[in-house]
Image 1 (tube, each protein chain N blue to C red):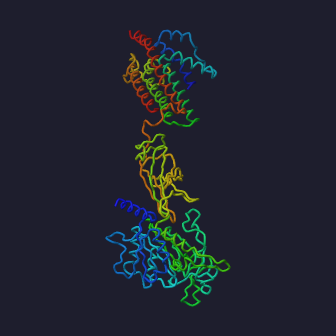
Image 2 (image 1 turned 180 degrees about the vertical axis):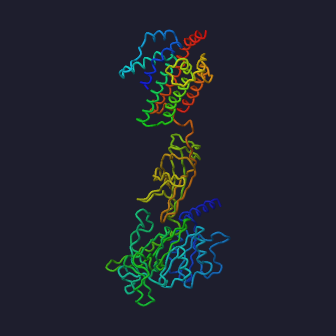
Image 3 (image 1 turned 90 degrees about the horizontal axis):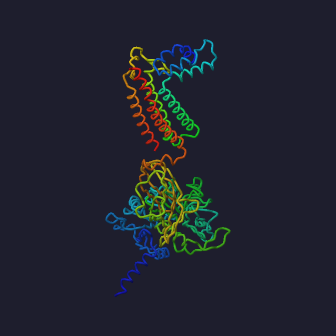
Length: 459
Length: 170
């Protein structure tokens, strides 16, 4: 029995080995359990990464995202419903509440069936817009798969997405092409929380196969206005991902060969992309953690008492350090700020008096220590050290540490003779005093004559 | 003022000599001659200067010398501030104010101590004197402040001024 605890420990270690940073309870909402087999590779991959998959039908009356007021699941994967919606337990309000309490949601749609209005209204909560007919498919006559959709042109063959901007991290890039069959396209509203992961190519457009050809005249959106995969990261860093094509997760497309017009026949990279997408949505990547935060005066021998003082004086030389880690699949690694971007420290009282780039000074096994040195501004009051780092695909860092900045004490000013510019005035003052003393002495010495004179005169 | 003074000058010596030392009266009697009506400007200036030197009591001369010194010191400090900037400003303020304040105090002392001489013999003092009271003499001012008392006040005021200036200059 002695090996029993160590075996248990080993079991825990294995569970910890590959795990999301925010829990492993994954609810998969699947209406037709017969379809479960179509995605077996995806389920296998997720389970291999440590998730505890719970399959539920939206028709299940017992299903609830919350239990005793707390989240019952950490993540939810919603496959497109066949009926009018996900039912009362997965209403838009419940799902928004779930995201508000730090749950992550991956919603997959399909262009093959009409998207229910309940899902459409959920997406409107996040400023994601579906075509008004809700059954459109993204079609492209230049980037389609010639093997499987030579007629309909609704299987898009796309490059893996690169960086969203030059100053963001690339979580979805890589080699290979993606096959996106019968995708339901959407457009993004104008909010900074939304970020497109995969946009449709410039030659794509939204097409409703149920209507006649005349509908092409007034299309919903065209080209790269259309997004196929988009992400929303809420202010509490909870994540919501909308995947336009649930079919791209199927086993069939994980291992399919596709051929773009005029191109070579290649294997799809859908499996790798699905891994990246689920890993990001379920907080395995792009999760930042702030470790130790220290600020102190510039000093050679620092003791514990010198760290994080509550009061500074104006014009003090101050050092601020912050330790940041990034979660990558199964462990924390040192965070590296993307090129062209900067982690910044603000020293603020209402508005920033300083906004300084933090530079990496030290790297530990699983964190980077960023620091900067600056002079406290010549303004007393209640200031705060703030690090406010909000970037697409990275969880938010919002740190605020208040300190008091006092003015000089009266004995902290330099003495007058230390300032050579004042020597003339000091000499002036002392010459006045010396002149006064000399005057007094001469005055007193000159007294007797006049006094004697006066006495003489009165006599 | 110089021409007016020059006109007044002939009447000035005789009363002043009676008020002061006999040595002064002797030098005066054999001293500068009275000016004719059409003297040249340098002559007038020299005459005024001679009159000032001979008719002013020694303590008043001493006061005037000290005040001239204070004007010089204050002027140098102000010129330095204009030329070299006012940093550190408190040093400028205390240095300059010490000179100005000392000047004011000395001027007060001069008013209080020279008026008697002015009353008995219209010396260089420009303090207005009432003729009746001025004849009292014995170092008493028109307000009845003795010279000793005036000097004590002057020393006390000056010490307070120096104390504040030294503190303010840090």
